[in-house]
Image 1: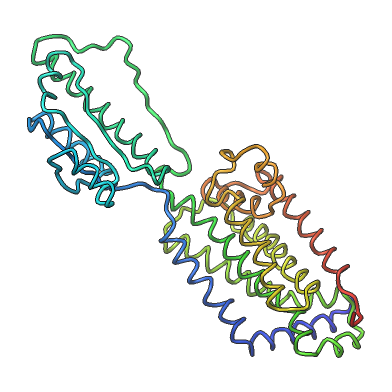
Image 2 (image 1 turned 45 degrees about the vertical axis):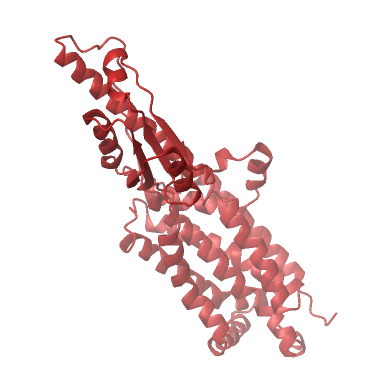
Length: 378
């Protein structure tokens, strides 16, 4: 391999990028758009669930229960309902995600028996939101019930029951505020790199075929390795720059805590960039159409990164066969690295397994890419 030939190919590719407005738009505008859209548009936090109330009791206790729902911050009171048909109408028309019905004898039954029924109806078309909202509602009711019990015992001169009481004090590490943005934003870096890197490099060799310049390239003494490295050097610089932009945006714009080492993050980001660039280049070599190569590269990078890497769906909650498939998804390892470096401050030693997996992927993809290119016109 001769550096002079490699640099000549890299310079030629850099000129093509500069003259290709589509490539420049992908390289410069797409990371910004993806960062803003995914950063602000994707959230797993459930806040201010629209809640309607049908309070038939109209007592101090029933009003306090409703106020507890709103004060929790998890629910937002939308409107008061007066009849049973209005409950179904409110849910069917999407005016509220849930309806709490307090019966007319709520206070009397509560003070005499200590147990009073309260009905909650939720729209389960969005099962994730509904499950979380039900858990929130159960928490509000449990705390309100405990306060009612303590107050009732004090009013009647009775000791507050303490037998069997468990003082549960949870502690949360690494994401103390349970903010889903801290969980999602690091993964956005992987999504953007996979999308931009593969899309750009999938056009490299296919462009030569469509423009009729492949004959000139084949006639040169450039080897397959020199061609691959020369083609990828400009895109590696672009991809790494996009990664730096996304990381800076995550820390200083979205305020995601960064507790790890920049060297660890840089090394692993370089490995992941090589993998996605190699996949795009391999598709460009095997498929002589820019459109076809870009579509296949998108299929091999974007879908696994978003669906099977743990970026949006927890791998631990997937069925066993799908969990086995995720072991072959290179983005899974980079997403794990990003979250560990950002939130835990993990080192290269802590991340030995995912780093080794990325390195193996980079070597295999590089070897396949070199083997795929042949200096003939077949």
